[in-house]
Image (tube, rainbow, N blue to C red; front, side):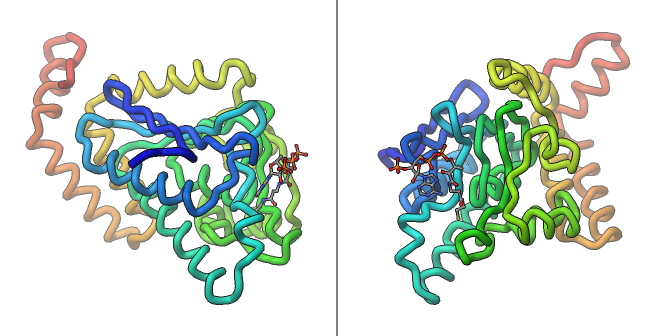
Length: 258
Ligand code: COA
């Protein structure tokens, strides 16, 4: 596929997707969602890719939401499809079996905030701003702002953001658990890459199993979740990564995972 709304880069063992409509603050239109979906399928199929980084191009935005110009033409039927189409892509992202990190470089509003929330981890610049301003437009969040966001920050805080449409600072986003870390704007990439390299130095199979187990905790009951964790734990004990990790500890050397 030729990508025009995103830049999809495969590095040695991770992928970087850059939302690339800077003149429209990386607003999420149908073409962008199609391209993102395609890139995510590529990532799912490529065992060499062990982590995904997602960011926005330009100085101002991660993504300023769904494309309002495109949305404006919606009626009841097409509006529902618009929401379902985007939500499917968000779900694909949230269910990736490798860690995904949103590197939020500016505005993450509406669908932009929902996209960041669909990643497993969020690091942001001190210039980043977050919010669900859909009530200003006479709509509601359509890609999980009333669902995944509630699970992440709790229903009261999600309700507060969703009914007020207010835009909050990076620091406030950290305080309510919406982002993991806030970094000086110029250091966002470097600090994020420090974390990426730390994760990439660990057992790839163990990292992927952690991602699957934590993701499953969102939908399984506590006892089902523990049972699933035990299944994955058992599977890990049959891997080369397990042999190498435990042997390296006992032999007092650094583990080397292939
Ligand atoms: N959809 C479509 N276009 C968008 C957009 C969106 N969600 N957000 C920004 N843009 C476009 C603007 O229309 C403008 O295009 P133009 O230069 O052709 O007029 C361009 O991006 C730059 O945006 P602008 O509003 O001029 O930048 P700003 O710095 O003054 O304001 C924001 C930045 C983010 C506060 C403002 O763009 C905004 O409120 N965007 C909409 C946020 C929103 O409601 N998101 C939820 C959508 S469901």
